[in-house]
Amino acid sequence: MSSEETLPRLLAERATMKTNEVALRQKDLGIWNEITWGEYYHTVERLAIALSKNFDFESGEKLAVIGENRPQWLYSQMAAQVLGGISVGVYQESLPRQLVYYLNDCRARVVIVEDQEQVDKLLEIEEQIPLVEHIIYYDGKGMRNYDHPKLSRFDDLLKSGSSLLKNEPDFFPKQTERSLGAHVAIIAYSAATTGNPKGAMLTHSNLIAAAANLNAIDPSEEKDDYFSFLPLAWIHEQVLSITNPLLTGMVVNFPEKPHTVMVDLREIGPQTLLAPPRVYQTLMSNFTIRMEGSSWFKKKVYHAFKKVGDRVTRAKIDKQPISSFDKLMYAFGDWIMFSPIRDHFGLGRVRRAYIAGAALESETYYFFQSIGVNVKQSYGGTELAGIALVHRDEDINIKSAGVPLPNTEVKIGEDGQILVKNLAIFSKYLHEEDREKVIEGWISLGDCGRIDDNGHVYILDRKEDIVTASTGEPVYPSMVENKLRASPYIQEAICFGKDSPYLTAILNIDMNNVGRWADKKRIIYTTYSELARDAEVIEFIEEEVAKLMSQLPEKARIKKFAILHKQFNANDGELTRTLKVRRKHIEDNYESLIAGLYSEAGSVNILDDTKETPEEINLQIIKLVMKQEVA
Image 1 (cartoon, rainbow, N blue to C red):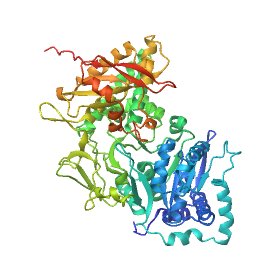
Image 2: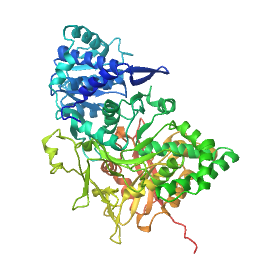
Image 3: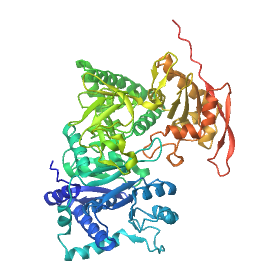
Image 4: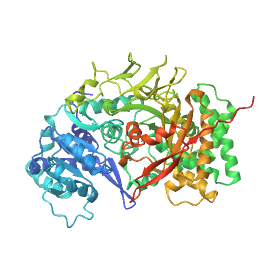
Protein backbone atom coordinates (compact mmCIF):
# COMPACT_ATOMS: atom_id res chain seq x y z
CA MET A 1 0.00 0.00 0.00
CA SER A 2 1.52 3.36 -1.03
CA SER A 3 2.41 5.85 1.70
CA GLU A 4 0.47 8.40 -0.34
CA GLU A 5 -2.79 6.46 -0.04
CA THR A 6 -5.58 8.18 1.86
CA LEU A 7 -9.19 7.22 2.48
CA PRO A 8 -10.61 9.79 0.01
CA ARG A 9 -8.18 8.59 -2.65
CA LEU A 10 -9.27 4.99 -2.10
CA LEU A 11 -12.89 6.11 -2.45
CA ALA A 12 -12.10 7.87 -5.74
CA GLU A 13 -10.33 4.77 -7.09
CA ARG A 14 -13.18 2.44 -6.17
CA ALA A 15 -15.82 4.85 -7.51
CA THR A 16 -13.93 4.95 -10.82
CA MET A 17 -13.52 1.18 -11.13
CA LYS A 18 -16.86 0.08 -9.60
CA THR A 19 -19.12 3.05 -10.26
CA ASN A 20 -22.39 1.12 -10.38
CA GLU A 21 -21.55 -1.56 -7.83
CA VAL A 22 -23.33 -1.43 -4.44
CA ALA A 23 -21.28 0.16 -1.65
CA LEU A 24 -23.86 0.76 1.08
CA ARG A 25 -27.37 -0.28 2.08
CA GLN A 26 -29.65 1.60 4.43
CA LYS A 27 -32.95 0.19 5.57
CA ASP A 28 -35.77 2.72 5.61
CA LEU A 29 -39.46 1.97 6.19
CA GLY A 30 -38.72 -1.72 5.83
CA ILE A 31 -36.95 -1.39 2.45
CA TRP A 32 -33.22 -1.82 1.87
CA ASN A 33 -32.05 1.14 -0.25
CA GLU A 34 -28.81 0.63 -2.16
CA ILE A 35 -26.11 3.25 -2.71
CA THR A 36 -23.45 2.68 -5.35
CA TRP A 37 -19.79 3.63 -5.15
CA GLY A 38 -20.44 6.35 -7.71
CA GLU A 39 -23.26 7.82 -5.60
CA TYR A 40 -21.13 7.55 -2.47
CA TYR A 41 -18.32 9.51 -4.18
CA HIS A 42 -20.62 12.15 -5.65
CA THR A 43 -22.32 12.83 -2.30
CA VAL A 44 -18.95 13.23 -0.58
CA GLU A 45 -17.80 15.51 -3.40
CA ARG A 46 -20.84 17.79 -3.05
CA LEU A 47 -20.62 17.94 0.73
CA ALA A 48 -16.89 18.65 0.70
CA ILE A 49 -17.10 21.63 -1.64
CA ALA A 50 -20.09 23.03 0.30
CA LEU A 51 -18.20 22.80 3.59
CA SER A 52 -15.22 24.49 2.01
CA LYS A 53 -17.02 27.35 0.26
CA ASN A 54 -19.94 27.96 2.64
CA PHE A 55 -18.27 27.35 6.01
CA ASP A 56 -14.59 27.97 5.18
CA PHE A 57 -13.68 24.51 6.47
CA GLU A 58 -9.92 24.11 6.06
CA SER A 59 -7.16 21.54 6.32
CA GLY A 60 -6.40 20.56 9.92
CA GLU A 61 -9.81 21.57 11.24
CA LYS A 62 -11.98 19.17 13.19
CA LEU A 63 -15.50 18.16 12.18
CA ALA A 64 -17.53 16.29 14.81
CA VAL A 65 -20.17 13.74 13.80
CA ILE A 66 -22.96 12.58 16.14
CA GLY A 67 -25.59 10.04 15.14
CA GLU A 68 -26.62 6.45 14.57
CA ASN A 69 -24.95 4.29 11.92
CA ARG A 70 -26.06 5.92 8.67
CA PRO A 71 -24.50 6.63 5.26
CA GLN A 72 -24.52 10.34 6.21
CA TRP A 73 -21.90 9.63 8.86
CA LEU A 74 -19.59 8.18 6.20
CA TYR A 75 -20.26 11.10 3.83
CA SER A 76 -19.50 13.62 6.59
CA GLN A 77 -16.29 11.95 7.71
CA MET A 78 -15.02 11.50 4.18
CA ALA A 79 -15.90 15.09 3.17
CA ALA A 80 -13.84 16.46 6.06
CA GLN A 81 -10.92 14.25 5.03
CA VAL A 82 -11.16 15.36 1.39
CA LEU A 83 -10.46 18.88 2.67
CA GLY A 84 -7.53 17.71 4.81
CA GLY A 85 -9.69 17.95 7.92
CA ILE A 86 -10.05 15.57 10.83
CA SER A 87 -13.25 13.72 11.66
CA VAL A 88 -14.20 13.28 15.32
CA GLY A 89 -16.80 10.64 16.09
CA VAL A 90 -18.96 11.23 19.16
CA TYR A 91 -21.21 8.57 20.68
CA GLN A 92 -24.84 9.39 19.92
CA GLU A 93 -26.04 8.50 23.44
CA SER A 94 -23.69 11.08 24.97
CA LEU A 95 -25.33 13.31 27.57
CA PRO A 96 -25.11 17.10 27.20
CA ARG A 97 -22.31 17.34 29.79
CA GLN A 98 -20.35 14.68 27.88
CA LEU A 99 -20.83 16.56 24.61
CA VAL A 100 -19.40 19.67 26.28
CA TYR A 101 -16.27 17.69 27.09
CA TYR A 102 -15.84 16.10 23.64
CA LEU A 103 -16.54 19.22 21.58
CA ASN A 104 -14.38 21.54 23.66
CA ASP A 105 -11.60 18.97 23.92
CA CYS A 106 -11.32 18.47 20.15
CA ARG A 107 -12.15 22.14 19.40
CA ALA A 108 -14.65 21.33 16.65
CA ARG A 109 -16.09 24.33 14.77
CA VAL A 110 -18.53 22.34 12.62
CA VAL A 111 -20.77 19.56 13.95
CA ILE A 112 -22.91 17.26 11.80
CA VAL A 113 -25.71 15.53 13.71
CA GLU A 114 -28.50 13.15 12.88
CA ASP A 115 -31.73 14.56 14.21
CA GLN A 116 -33.78 16.76 16.50
CA GLU A 117 -32.59 14.96 19.62
CA GLN A 118 -28.94 15.80 18.93
CA VAL A 119 -29.79 19.37 17.84
CA ASP A 120 -31.70 19.93 21.09
CA LYS A 121 -28.75 18.72 23.16
CA LEU A 122 -26.35 21.05 21.37
CA LEU A 123 -28.65 24.08 21.63
CA GLU A 124 -29.10 23.33 25.34
CA ILE A 125 -25.32 23.62 25.89
CA GLU A 126 -24.70 26.32 23.26
CA GLU A 127 -23.07 28.73 25.71
CA GLN A 128 -20.76 25.97 26.98
CA ILE A 129 -19.44 25.10 23.50
CA PRO A 130 -18.38 28.54 22.20
CA LEU A 131 -16.16 27.13 19.44
CA VAL A 132 -19.07 25.47 17.62
CA GLU A 133 -20.25 27.79 14.83
CA HIS A 134 -22.27 25.45 12.60
CA ILE A 135 -24.66 22.59 13.38
CA ILE A 136 -25.77 20.56 10.34
CA TYR A 137 -28.59 18.02 10.66
CA TYR A 138 -29.64 15.37 8.14
CA ASP A 139 -32.94 14.08 9.58
CA GLY A 140 -35.38 16.98 9.41
CA LYS A 141 -38.24 15.28 11.26
CA GLY A 142 -39.61 17.71 13.86
CA MET A 143 -37.25 20.50 12.75
CA ARG A 144 -39.69 22.59 10.68
CA ASN A 145 -40.10 25.39 13.22
CA TYR A 146 -36.46 25.57 14.27
CA ASP A 147 -34.91 28.93 13.40
CA HIS A 148 -31.37 29.34 14.67
CA PRO A 149 -28.41 31.02 12.92
CA LYS A 150 -26.10 28.05 13.57
CA LEU A 151 -28.44 25.46 12.03
CA SER A 152 -28.18 24.15 8.45
CA ARG A 153 -29.84 21.27 6.61
CA PHE A 154 -27.61 18.55 5.21
CA ASP A 155 -29.68 18.36 2.01
CA ASP A 156 -29.32 22.11 1.49
CA LEU A 157 -25.55 21.73 1.62
CA LEU A 158 -25.71 18.98 -1.00
CA LYS A 159 -27.79 21.22 -3.29
CA SER A 160 -25.29 24.01 -2.81
CA GLY A 161 -22.47 21.58 -3.54
CA SER A 162 -24.08 20.54 -6.83
CA SER A 163 -24.13 24.17 -7.97
CA LEU A 164 -20.58 24.85 -6.84
CA LEU A 165 -19.23 21.80 -8.67
CA LYS A 166 -20.41 23.21 -12.00
CA ASN A 167 -17.63 25.80 -11.72
CA GLU A 168 -15.08 23.44 -10.15
CA PRO A 169 -15.73 19.90 -11.46
CA ASP A 170 -12.23 18.78 -10.49
CA PHE A 171 -12.55 19.96 -6.87
CA PHE A 172 -12.23 16.46 -5.32
CA PRO A 173 -9.04 15.37 -7.12
CA LYS A 174 -7.42 18.77 -6.60
CA GLN A 175 -8.04 18.62 -2.87
CA THR A 176 -6.80 15.06 -2.46
CA GLU A 177 -3.60 15.77 -4.42
CA ARG A 178 -2.27 17.55 -1.34
CA SER A 179 -3.17 14.85 1.20
CA LEU A 180 -0.70 12.31 2.54
CA GLY A 181 -1.09 9.03 4.37
CA ALA A 182 0.74 10.59 7.32
CA HIS A 183 -1.97 13.24 7.75
CA VAL A 184 -4.36 12.74 10.66
CA ALA A 185 -7.69 11.31 9.46
CA ILE A 186 -9.71 10.89 12.65
CA ILE A 187 -9.63 11.52 16.37
CA ALA A 188 -11.04 8.51 18.21
CA TYR A 189 -11.68 8.74 21.93
CA SER A 190 -10.56 5.95 24.22
CA ALA A 191 -13.09 3.94 26.22
CA ALA A 192 -11.98 5.72 29.42
CA THR A 193 -12.58 2.98 31.97
CA THR A 194 -10.70 5.38 34.27
CA GLY A 195 -10.63 9.17 34.01
CA ASN A 196 -11.74 11.24 31.03
CA PRO A 197 -11.59 9.86 27.47
CA LYS A 198 -8.36 10.63 25.63
CA GLY A 199 -8.36 11.67 22.00
CA ALA A 200 -6.14 9.41 19.90
CA MET A 201 -5.07 10.87 16.55
CA LEU A 202 -4.99 8.25 13.79
CA THR A 203 -3.58 8.88 10.34
CA HIS A 204 -4.86 7.55 7.02
CA SER A 205 -1.87 5.19 7.01
CA ASN A 206 -2.75 3.90 10.50
CA LEU A 207 -6.30 3.03 9.46
CA ILE A 208 -5.28 1.51 6.14
CA ALA A 209 -2.56 -0.60 7.81
CA ALA A 210 -5.07 -1.86 10.41
CA ALA A 211 -7.51 -2.99 7.71
CA ALA A 212 -4.77 -4.44 5.49
CA ASN A 213 -3.27 -6.45 8.38
CA LEU A 214 -6.66 -7.95 9.21
CA ASN A 215 -7.36 -8.75 5.56
CA ALA A 216 -4.03 -10.54 5.27
CA ILE A 217 -5.40 -13.36 7.45
CA ASP A 218 -9.17 -12.90 7.05
CA PRO A 219 -9.65 -11.66 3.47
CA SER A 220 -13.00 -10.07 2.67
CA GLU A 221 -14.35 -10.62 -0.80
CA GLU A 222 -15.92 -8.03 -3.04
CA LYS A 223 -19.69 -7.82 -2.45
CA ASP A 224 -19.41 -9.56 0.92
CA ASP A 225 -21.92 -8.13 3.38
CA TYR A 226 -20.93 -6.46 6.62
CA PHE A 227 -23.54 -5.44 9.20
CA SER A 228 -22.68 -2.15 10.89
CA PHE A 229 -24.59 -1.71 14.14
CA LEU A 230 -22.00 -0.78 16.76
CA PRO A 231 -21.28 2.95 17.26
CA LEU A 232 -19.18 4.43 14.44
CA ALA A 233 -17.33 6.46 17.07
CA TRP A 234 -15.73 3.14 18.16
CA ILE A 235 -12.43 2.51 16.40
CA HIS A 236 -13.22 -1.15 15.62
CA GLU A 237 -16.36 -0.11 13.75
CA GLN A 238 -14.44 2.65 11.96
CA VAL A 239 -11.98 0.17 10.49
CA LEU A 240 -14.58 -2.43 9.48
CA SER A 241 -17.33 -0.07 8.27
CA ILE A 242 -15.27 2.61 6.55
CA THR A 243 -11.67 1.61 5.84
CA ASN A 244 -12.02 -2.09 5.04
CA PRO A 245 -14.76 -1.63 2.39
CA LEU A 246 -12.56 0.91 0.59
CA LEU A 247 -9.85 -1.76 0.31
CA THR A 248 -12.03 -4.77 -0.45
CA GLY A 249 -15.34 -3.62 -1.92
CA MET A 250 -17.42 -5.28 0.78
CA VAL A 251 -20.95 -3.87 1.18
CA VAL A 252 -21.82 -2.10 4.44
CA ASN A 253 -25.39 -2.55 5.68
CA PHE A 254 -26.96 -0.17 8.22
CA PRO A 255 -29.98 -1.19 10.33
CA GLU A 256 -33.15 0.89 10.27
CA LYS A 257 -33.23 1.58 14.01
CA PRO A 258 -31.37 0.27 17.07
CA HIS A 259 -34.42 -1.76 18.11
CA THR A 260 -34.62 -3.46 14.68
CA VAL A 261 -31.01 -4.71 14.73
CA MET A 262 -31.84 -8.39 15.24
CA VAL A 263 -34.51 -8.44 12.52
CA ASP A 264 -32.24 -6.56 10.11
CA LEU A 265 -29.32 -8.84 10.90
CA ARG A 266 -31.42 -11.87 9.94
CA GLU A 267 -32.44 -10.24 6.66
CA ILE A 268 -28.87 -9.41 5.63
CA GLY A 269 -27.08 -12.53 6.90
CA PRO A 270 -23.59 -10.96 6.69
CA GLN A 271 -20.32 -12.78 6.05
CA THR A 272 -18.53 -10.71 8.70
CA LEU A 273 -19.77 -9.58 12.10
CA LEU A 274 -18.18 -7.63 14.94
CA ALA A 275 -19.70 -7.51 18.42
CA PRO A 276 -18.69 -7.24 22.10
CA PRO A 277 -19.08 -10.30 24.36
CA ARG A 278 -22.40 -9.08 25.78
CA VAL A 279 -24.09 -9.45 22.37
CA TYR A 280 -23.00 -13.08 22.01
CA GLN A 281 -23.83 -13.85 25.64
CA THR A 282 -27.30 -12.33 25.25
CA LEU A 283 -27.98 -14.35 22.09
CA MET A 284 -26.95 -17.57 23.80
CA SER A 285 -28.81 -16.80 27.02
CA ASN A 286 -32.05 -15.95 25.24
CA PHE A 287 -31.81 -19.08 23.12
CA THR A 288 -31.03 -21.27 26.14
CA ILE A 289 -34.01 -19.96 28.09
CA ARG A 290 -36.34 -20.39 25.09
CA MET A 291 -35.10 -23.94 24.61
CA GLU A 292 -35.83 -24.72 28.26
CA GLY A 293 -39.43 -23.68 27.64
CA SER A 294 -39.83 -25.77 24.48
CA SER A 295 -41.43 -29.19 24.13
CA TRP A 296 -39.90 -32.35 25.58
CA PHE A 297 -39.14 -33.68 22.08
CA LYS A 298 -37.37 -30.50 20.91
CA LYS A 299 -35.23 -30.43 24.04
CA LYS A 300 -34.34 -34.09 23.61
CA VAL A 301 -33.26 -33.62 19.99
CA TYR A 302 -31.36 -30.40 20.74
CA HIS A 303 -29.39 -31.84 23.66
CA ALA A 304 -28.59 -35.02 21.74
CA PHE A 305 -27.05 -33.15 18.82
CA LYS A 306 -25.55 -30.49 21.07
CA LYS A 307 -23.42 -33.19 22.67
CA VAL A 308 -22.17 -34.16 19.20
CA GLY A 309 -21.48 -30.50 18.40
CA ASP A 310 -19.54 -30.09 21.67
CA ARG A 311 -17.42 -33.19 20.95
CA VAL A 312 -16.60 -32.04 17.41
CA THR A 313 -15.80 -28.51 18.60
CA ARG A 314 -13.51 -29.68 21.39
CA ALA A 315 -11.72 -32.03 19.00
CA LYS A 316 -11.16 -29.19 16.52
CA ILE A 317 -9.92 -26.79 19.18
CA ASP A 318 -7.69 -29.43 20.77
CA LYS A 319 -6.53 -30.50 17.29
CA GLN A 320 -7.67 -34.08 17.87
CA PRO A 321 -9.08 -36.45 15.23
CA ILE A 322 -12.87 -36.53 14.78
CA SER A 323 -14.45 -39.96 14.44
CA SER A 324 -16.37 -40.82 11.28
CA PHE A 325 -19.50 -41.35 13.39
CA ASP A 326 -19.26 -37.85 14.90
CA LYS A 327 -18.64 -36.33 11.48
CA LEU A 328 -21.74 -38.04 10.11
CA MET A 329 -23.90 -37.14 13.12
CA TYR A 330 -22.68 -33.54 13.07
CA ALA A 331 -23.55 -33.20 9.36
CA PHE A 332 -27.01 -34.58 10.07
CA GLY A 333 -27.41 -32.32 13.11
CA ASP A 334 -26.30 -29.33 11.06
CA TRP A 335 -28.96 -30.08 8.48
CA ILE A 336 -31.88 -30.48 10.86
CA MET A 337 -30.90 -28.16 13.72
CA PHE A 338 -27.66 -26.15 13.72
CA SER A 339 -28.29 -24.49 10.36
CA PRO A 340 -31.79 -23.27 11.37
CA ILE A 341 -30.34 -21.93 14.65
CA ARG A 342 -27.68 -19.99 12.73
CA ASP A 343 -30.35 -18.61 10.40
CA HIS A 344 -32.45 -17.58 13.40
CA PHE A 345 -29.51 -15.54 14.71
CA GLY A 346 -28.80 -14.07 11.26
CA LEU A 347 -25.46 -15.89 11.18
CA GLY A 348 -26.24 -18.39 8.43
CA ARG A 349 -23.58 -17.00 6.07
CA VAL A 350 -21.04 -15.76 8.61
CA ARG A 351 -17.47 -16.77 7.87
CA ARG A 352 -16.11 -14.94 10.89
CA ALA A 353 -17.72 -13.31 13.92
CA TYR A 354 -15.19 -11.19 15.79
CA ILE A 355 -15.37 -10.73 19.55
CA ALA A 356 -14.04 -7.29 20.47
CA GLY A 357 -13.81 -5.14 23.59
CA ALA A 358 -13.31 -7.95 26.13
CA ALA A 359 -12.94 -11.73 26.43
CA LEU A 360 -15.86 -14.05 25.75
CA GLU A 361 -16.59 -16.65 28.43
CA SER A 362 -15.67 -20.18 27.34
CA GLU A 363 -19.19 -21.65 27.59
CA THR A 364 -20.54 -19.06 25.13
CA TYR A 365 -17.54 -19.66 22.89
CA TYR A 366 -18.21 -23.40 22.76
CA PHE A 367 -21.91 -22.80 22.15
CA PHE A 368 -21.36 -20.78 18.97
CA GLN A 369 -18.52 -22.94 17.67
CA SER A 370 -20.63 -26.06 18.23
CA ILE A 371 -23.49 -24.74 16.07
CA GLY A 372 -21.04 -23.80 13.31
CA VAL A 373 -20.47 -20.09 13.95
CA ASN A 374 -16.80 -19.18 13.64
CA VAL A 375 -16.50 -16.82 16.61
CA LYS A 376 -12.99 -15.44 16.97
CA GLN A 377 -11.55 -13.65 19.98
CA SER A 378 -9.62 -10.48 19.22
CA TYR A 379 -7.64 -7.92 21.18
CA GLY A 380 -7.04 -4.31 20.37
CA GLY A 381 -8.01 -0.79 21.25
CA THR A 382 -8.30 2.79 20.16
CA GLU A 383 -4.57 3.40 20.17
CA LEU A 384 -4.00 0.24 18.10
CA ALA A 385 -6.53 1.29 15.42
CA GLY A 386 -8.77 -1.61 16.36
CA ILE A 387 -7.74 -5.25 16.21
CA ALA A 388 -4.07 -6.20 16.75
CA LEU A 389 -4.47 -9.85 17.80
CA VAL A 390 -7.01 -12.38 16.56
CA HIS A 391 -7.56 -16.13 16.38
CA ARG A 392 -6.77 -17.90 13.13
CA ASP A 393 -9.52 -20.06 11.64
CA GLU A 394 -7.55 -23.28 12.14
CA ASP A 395 -5.92 -22.24 15.40
CA ILE A 396 -8.67 -21.42 17.88
CA ASN A 397 -7.57 -21.27 21.52
CA ILE A 398 -10.43 -20.19 23.74
CA LYS A 399 -8.12 -19.16 26.57
CA SER A 400 -6.07 -16.78 24.44
CA ALA A 401 -6.76 -13.38 22.91
CA GLY A 402 -5.33 -14.56 19.62
CA VAL A 403 -2.12 -14.31 17.65
CA PRO A 404 -0.58 -11.02 16.41
CA LEU A 405 -1.71 -9.86 12.98
CA PRO A 406 0.90 -9.74 10.20
CA ASN A 407 3.42 -6.90 10.61
CA THR A 408 2.64 -6.77 14.34
CA GLU A 409 5.11 -7.37 17.16
CA VAL A 410 4.14 -8.27 20.71
CA LYS A 411 6.28 -8.65 23.81
CA ILE A 412 5.87 -8.72 27.59
CA GLY A 413 7.39 -5.81 29.50
CA GLU A 414 9.37 -6.06 32.71
CA ASP A 415 6.24 -5.29 34.72
CA GLY A 416 4.24 -8.02 32.97
CA GLN A 417 2.30 -5.68 30.68
CA ILE A 418 1.62 -6.57 27.06
CA LEU A 419 3.42 -4.28 24.60
CA VAL A 420 2.39 -3.98 20.94
CA LYS A 421 4.11 -2.42 17.95
CA ASN A 422 2.92 -2.05 14.34
CA LEU A 423 2.16 0.54 11.64
CA ALA A 424 -1.44 0.89 12.77
CA ILE A 425 -0.52 2.34 16.16
CA PHE A 426 -1.91 5.84 16.47
CA SER A 427 0.09 8.95 15.64
CA LYS A 428 -0.20 10.61 19.06
CA TYR A 429 -2.67 11.76 21.66
CA LEU A 430 -4.50 15.01 21.09
CA HIS A 431 -2.92 16.64 24.13
CA GLU A 432 0.75 16.85 25.01
CA GLU A 433 0.31 15.70 28.61
CA ASP A 434 -0.97 12.29 27.43
CA ARG A 435 1.88 11.55 25.04
CA GLU A 436 4.29 9.66 27.30
CA LYS A 437 2.45 6.40 26.68
CA VAL A 438 4.28 5.38 23.46
CA ILE A 439 7.93 4.43 24.01
CA GLU A 440 10.09 3.72 20.95
CA GLY A 441 7.02 2.69 18.99
CA TRP A 442 5.74 0.26 21.65
CA ILE A 443 2.49 0.80 23.50
CA SER A 444 0.65 -0.94 26.31
CA LEU A 445 -3.08 -0.70 26.91
CA GLY A 446 -2.54 -1.54 30.58
CA ASP A 447 -3.20 -5.29 30.41
CA CYS A 448 -0.88 -7.90 31.88
CA GLY A 449 -0.40 -11.20 30.11
CA ARG A 450 1.89 -13.86 28.71
CA ILE A 451 2.83 -15.36 25.33
CA ASP A 452 3.09 -19.10 24.71
CA ASP A 453 5.44 -20.94 22.37
CA ASN A 454 2.83 -20.89 19.57
CA GLY A 455 2.51 -17.11 19.63
CA HIS A 456 -0.84 -17.02 21.42
CA VAL A 457 -1.21 -14.05 23.75
CA TYR A 458 -3.09 -14.53 27.03
CA ILE A 459 -4.69 -11.55 28.75
CA LEU A 460 -4.66 -11.96 32.52
CA ASP A 461 -6.14 -8.66 33.73
CA ARG A 462 -5.45 -4.97 33.96
CA LYS A 463 -2.38 -4.35 36.09
CA GLU A 464 -4.21 -2.20 38.63
CA ASP A 465 -7.04 -4.75 39.06
CA ILE A 466 -4.98 -7.86 39.91
CA VAL A 467 -5.67 -9.13 43.42
CA THR A 468 -3.18 -11.00 45.63
CA ALA A 469 -4.72 -13.92 47.54
CA SER A 470 -3.83 -14.75 51.15
CA THR A 471 -1.52 -17.44 49.76
CA GLY A 472 0.43 -14.77 47.87
CA GLU A 473 -0.86 -16.03 44.51
CA PRO A 474 -2.34 -13.57 41.99
CA VAL A 475 -6.09 -13.66 41.35
CA TYR A 476 -7.53 -12.14 38.19
CA PRO A 477 -11.00 -10.62 38.79
CA SER A 478 -11.85 -10.63 35.07
CA MET A 479 -11.65 -14.45 35.06
CA VAL A 480 -14.17 -14.62 37.92
CA GLU A 481 -16.41 -12.02 36.26
CA ASN A 482 -16.45 -13.96 33.00
CA LYS A 483 -17.41 -17.12 34.88
CA LEU A 484 -20.35 -15.32 36.53
CA ARG A 485 -21.49 -13.84 33.22
CA ALA A 486 -21.69 -17.37 31.82
CA SER A 487 -25.02 -17.74 33.62
CA PRO A 488 -27.99 -16.75 31.45
CA TYR A 489 -29.43 -15.13 34.56
CA ILE A 490 -26.48 -12.79 35.27
CA GLN A 491 -25.97 -9.90 32.88
CA GLU A 492 -23.03 -8.16 34.53
CA ALA A 493 -20.62 -8.92 37.37
CA ILE A 494 -17.93 -6.75 38.92
CA CYS A 495 -15.53 -8.27 41.44
CA PHE A 496 -13.62 -6.51 44.21
CA GLY A 497 -10.83 -7.64 46.48
CA LYS A 498 -7.84 -5.34 46.14
CA ASP A 499 -6.09 -5.15 49.54
CA SER A 500 -8.96 -7.15 51.05
CA PRO A 501 -9.14 -10.62 52.67
CA TYR A 502 -11.45 -12.14 50.06
CA LEU A 503 -13.26 -11.51 46.77
CA THR A 504 -16.75 -10.02 46.59
CA ALA A 505 -19.02 -9.00 43.71
CA ILE A 506 -21.87 -6.73 42.70
CA LEU A 507 -24.21 -8.34 40.17
CA ASN A 508 -26.79 -7.24 37.63
CA ILE A 509 -29.38 -9.89 36.83
CA ASP A 510 -30.62 -10.42 33.29
CA MET A 511 -34.14 -9.01 33.52
CA ASN A 512 -35.52 -10.94 30.53
CA ASN A 513 -34.32 -14.35 31.63
CA VAL A 514 -34.85 -13.90 35.36
CA GLY A 515 -38.22 -12.36 34.51
CA ARG A 516 -39.25 -15.51 32.62
CA TRP A 517 -38.16 -17.64 35.58
CA ALA A 518 -40.10 -15.37 37.96
CA ASP A 519 -43.23 -15.57 35.80
CA LYS A 520 -43.17 -19.35 36.01
CA LYS A 521 -42.86 -19.07 39.80
CA ARG A 522 -45.78 -16.61 39.85
CA ILE A 523 -43.61 -13.91 41.40
CA ILE A 524 -45.20 -10.49 41.09
CA TYR A 525 -42.99 -7.55 40.10
CA THR A 526 -43.21 -4.43 37.95
CA THR A 527 -39.66 -3.02 37.89
CA TYR A 528 -36.10 -4.28 37.70
CA SER A 529 -35.54 -3.10 41.27
CA GLU A 530 -38.46 -5.15 42.60
CA LEU A 531 -37.32 -8.23 40.70
CA ALA A 532 -33.68 -7.89 41.83
CA ARG A 533 -34.65 -7.56 45.50
CA ASP A 534 -37.23 -10.36 45.60
CA ALA A 535 -36.32 -13.01 48.20
CA GLU A 536 -36.95 -15.97 45.86
CA VAL A 537 -34.91 -14.37 43.09
CA ILE A 538 -32.04 -13.73 45.50
CA GLU A 539 -32.12 -17.37 46.61
CA PHE A 540 -32.18 -18.52 42.98
CA ILE A 541 -29.21 -16.33 42.01
CA GLU A 542 -27.33 -17.52 45.10
CA GLU A 543 -27.69 -21.10 43.85
CA GLU A 544 -26.47 -20.04 40.39
CA VAL A 545 -23.43 -18.27 41.83
CA ALA A 546 -22.58 -21.21 44.12
CA LYS A 547 -22.74 -23.57 41.13
CA LEU A 548 -20.41 -21.35 39.11
CA MET A 549 -17.96 -20.76 41.95
CA SER A 550 -17.62 -24.51 42.50
CA GLN A 551 -15.93 -24.60 39.10
CA LEU A 552 -13.16 -22.24 40.24
CA PRO A 553 -10.23 -22.79 42.59
CA GLU A 554 -10.81 -21.74 46.21
CA LYS A 555 -8.66 -18.61 45.94
CA ALA A 556 -10.76 -17.28 43.03
CA ARG A 557 -14.18 -17.75 44.60
CA ILE A 558 -16.23 -14.80 45.76
CA LYS A 559 -17.34 -15.06 49.39
CA LYS A 560 -20.11 -12.46 49.35
CA PHE A 561 -22.13 -10.60 46.74
CA ALA A 562 -25.02 -8.19 46.34
CA ILE A 563 -27.54 -7.80 43.54
CA LEU A 564 -27.77 -4.15 42.58
CA HIS A 565 -31.21 -2.54 42.46
CA LYS A 566 -30.49 -1.03 39.04
CA GLN A 567 -28.71 -2.05 35.85
CA PHE A 568 -25.31 -0.54 35.19
CA ASN A 569 -25.70 2.26 32.70
CA ALA A 570 -23.42 4.31 30.46
CA ASN A 571 -25.48 7.43 31.16
CA ASP A 572 -24.62 7.09 34.84
CA GLY A 573 -20.93 6.70 34.03
CA GLU A 574 -20.84 3.05 35.14
CA LEU A 575 -20.14 1.69 31.64
CA THR A 576 -18.36 3.11 28.66
CA ARG A 577 -20.34 3.58 25.43
CA THR A 578 -18.89 0.25 24.26
CA LEU A 579 -20.24 -1.41 27.45
CA LYS A 580 -16.91 -1.76 29.25
CA VAL A 581 -17.12 -1.48 33.03
CA ARG A 582 -15.75 1.70 34.58
CA ARG A 583 -14.53 0.03 37.74
CA LYS A 584 -13.17 3.14 39.51
CA HIS A 585 -16.45 5.00 39.02
CA ILE A 586 -18.42 2.05 40.43
CA GLU A 587 -16.06 1.73 43.39
CA ASP A 588 -16.58 5.41 44.19
CA ASN A 589 -20.33 5.40 43.55
CA TYR A 590 -21.08 2.29 45.61
CA GLU A 591 -18.45 2.73 48.31
CA SER A 592 -20.89 2.01 51.15
CA LEU A 593 -22.20 -1.15 49.46
CA ILE A 594 -18.67 -2.47 48.88
CA ALA A 595 -17.80 -1.68 52.50
CA GLY A 596 -20.87 -3.68 53.54
CA LEU A 597 -19.57 -6.68 51.59
CA TYR A 598 -16.55 -6.68 53.91
CA SER A 599 -18.51 -6.24 57.13
CA GLU A 600 -20.68 -8.51 59.26
CA ALA A 601 -23.82 -6.71 58.14
CA GLY A 602 -26.54 -8.72 56.46
CA SER A 603 -27.76 -5.74 54.43
CA VAL A 604 -26.84 -2.20 53.44
CA ASN A 605 -29.01 0.87 52.97
CA ILE A 606 -28.20 2.91 49.87
CA LEU A 607 -29.88 5.79 48.09
CA ASP A 608 -31.97 4.80 45.07
CA ASP A 609 -31.79 7.80 42.74
CA THR A 610 -33.44 6.05 39.79
CA LYS A 611 -36.84 7.37 40.86
CA GLU A 612 -38.18 10.90 40.54
CA THR A 613 -37.91 11.23 44.32
CA PRO A 614 -34.75 9.47 45.55
CA GLU A 615 -35.33 7.16 48.49
CA GLU A 616 -33.26 4.91 50.69
CA ILE A 617 -33.57 1.19 49.99
CA ASN A 618 -32.14 -1.92 51.57
CA LEU A 619 -29.91 -4.32 49.63
CA GLN A 620 -29.19 -7.77 50.98
CA ILE A 621 -25.61 -8.98 51.40
CA ILE A 622 -25.49 -12.65 50.37
CA LYS A 623 -22.83 -14.75 52.07
CA LEU A 624 -22.04 -17.64 49.79
CA VAL A 625 -22.20 -21.08 51.41
CA MET A 626 -20.60 -23.72 49.23
CA LYS A 627 -21.99 -27.25 49.47
CA GLN A 628 -19.41 -29.72 50.68
CA GLU A 629 -18.47 -32.27 48.05
CA VAL A 630 -18.95 -35.85 49.12
CA ALA A 631 -15.86 -38.00 48.67
